[in-house]
Image (tube, rainbow, N blue to C red; front, side, top):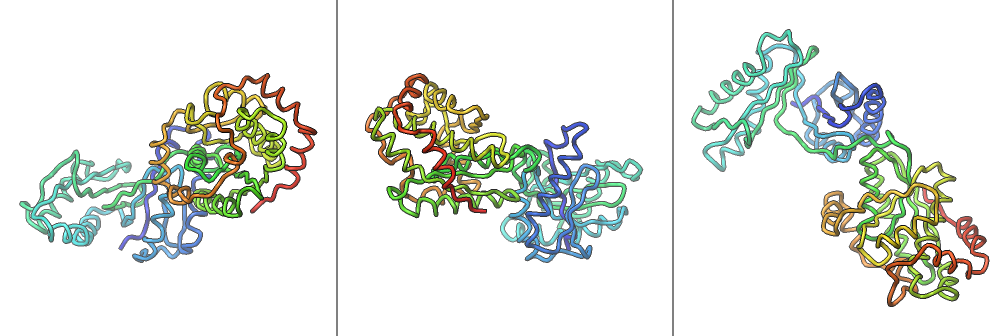
Length: 400
């Protein structure tokens, strides 16, 4: 009997004069996420986003099942609840609560004799005759009579079952379930960025984290054909497709770094190879970012995780470009990155073992502190370094 879905945001509510922009962006994203469900109308009503059927009817169980994972990917939402939208009439609310109760409580009482329960009422309609606490007492009492007072123990702090009631000027909404959403800001409320996406665990998490701050992201990945197999690119394409489920669009730029890696192998100090690779990657990514109006680069680097990610080497890598480089995981440890990867669904994809560009001609003992001047001196040894970069950029394949 659920005929609407309440979508709650948190951080957006702290915005000032530009709050409408964030709300409009959130509504647009939710419409995109629900596009395949096909029956939904998304609109704003004073501090909430609401999802209804186009015909204002009740959602089927299959429709609710399809909607739930979509809203769980909506950045900007804190939580959402399938609800019954009712006239502003306490008798109708009480009747609806009693109709909803068996589907919630019968399975619980089949397993245990008692349940902790609470009602949480929120009354923005100050003309409604009952105060919030009176609404809560009324609904608890009505449901307790249905099963017997001894079956319920009121716990306002940590109840097993919570009945929510929102009393608004236009209607009253009643709901039992409250599903979490990722929070943050809606994708598109901040400028587009370009994520350096490898097949590892960290860079997909970094991409997801900047989306959570409102930045849509394109991706650039590096392979080293013929030294890496086609599966290297296939793996990253699958990760990018999964990440795109959280945003409206994101293009993948596929770049073959092997021509430059061979020159670095042949002309430069072996211990500096990885840092020189990373500097080249940033230079290539910067050119792609500027051509596609991406305002920053994003990497999955964390301080101290590998030899190229020491403070000294990160500084040397950064100095290769002038564009802003964002590192959302800079202070995270590996277990934190793994936990997020598991939550967002990229961990299984990242766990597939295929070679990546950074392992090609990898040094046996990489330097942990390459000075900027020394890196620049090594790059001067590479014949036609700038021309090689330009050729690599011109050969990039973009997957829409």
